[in-house]
Length: 241
Image 1 (cartoon, rainbow, N blue to C red):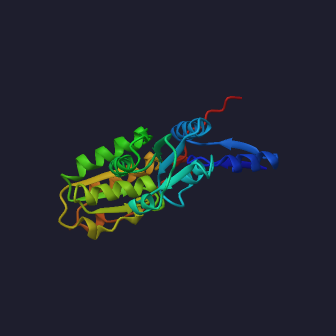
Image 2: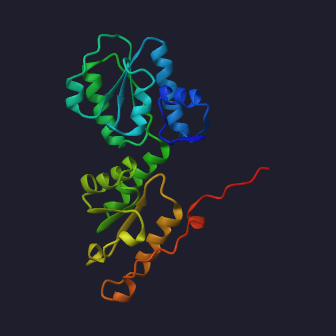
Image 3: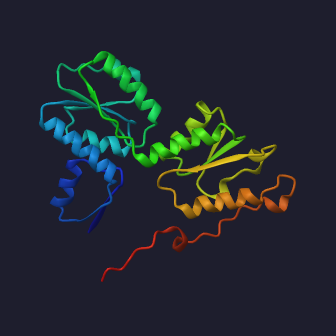
């Protein structure tokens, strides 16, 4: 059989189980996640406790914590920090790569107030940070923001969150052009569009094309039918044989 490891990474326990079952492994773990996990393993091996800022029940933190459940401590909120008690002079802080840059910075500062010896290494994915900064910059000048992405995607949800809480612009999440509600666009002159890190460009472009021709007062422009096929969406795979 074959197993594909998600881009979010998996724990060492999962890797070992795959080997034990003699499965063919396709490791699709993101290089930034690999980098963070390697950093965690290195620090734990040198006697550090790791405070990991991330989302509970998200696969990326689960993979990170799985490196050493006794030494890697997941923190999502200040309440989690209140419950944490570490008696170790060697502490590092790192984070889930798809978190909000601003949320991570705020939590890291609070952690360092309580553990001044803790060293912070920000592992926000560069692509994630660029998207977050861009949506803040553009959403401020928009009437509404549309985020194209999976509703279960943490980085997509963070883009909507930044639009609403920092740019104060209403945000809607869609998976495809067919999810757009024309009523969202009533009286709108400017729409900001962004997408999650894993959203295929073709899906985002279809949303943009719909918006460019949209006229609220012309029902003929309200048709939201995706014409994409798997061949349009999937990346080109080179045959090296």
